[in-house]
Image (cartoon, rainbow, N blue to C red):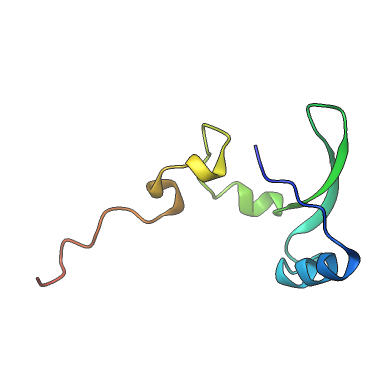
Length: 78
């Protein structure tokens, strides 16, 4: 699950800089469930292995713990 945006070439160039393409994320073509093909940014495989799996498949619905946020620091004075 993801989000799809139509962007012009200038915006795509800006996104490439933001995502550090091709040195970090790689822009690649994927096929959607309806058969259409779109470009997406893909994280390097060796980095994906160290990340928690999003079981729902929906990045926006992932639990906070999957981001590494964890519980609040119990050692903090308060």
